[in-house]
Image 1 (spheres, rainbow, N blue to C red):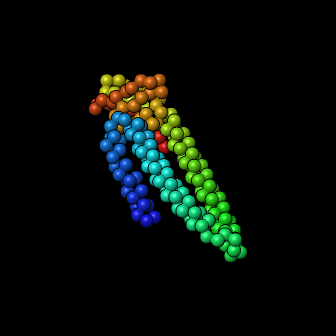
Image 2: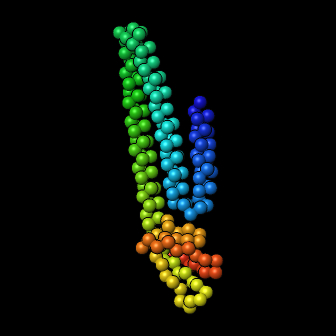
Image 3: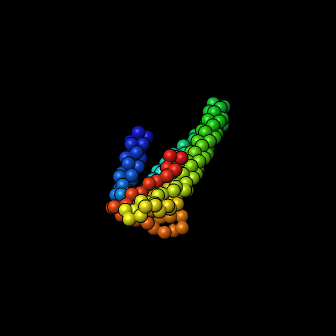
Length: 170
């Protein structure tokens, strides 16, 4: 069951990525990336919620079964202590894993945000001008044939113009 669910999650991630590729080719690349990520996050939360409820039902069923049997025998009490310590260890491991994943996701999101907020200098060479026109643009606002400057001006590059992006290697 775990293998089937894992394959299903991977398939759904790829399917969501392919659905958003059509949006990526348009000028709304920035919005499409966040919609794609939002879909993946919602899918992950849905799978997590389903697994929580499945495990919770299993735990309730096991506790009812355990209470119905004789709980006074020494063997039962020893097994209960062992199960309790194992459960505590698993719970601590799950919380540590959750903290690690949330922390790693936060760090990666911060680095992506910082990279998107990088200011690039763009020189736009026009055929009728000797000197290029210089613009400053955030990296996430740069598209193939257009960009939005830091001042909020949308510039579309014509077919006979040449665009040079400086500081892209940083």
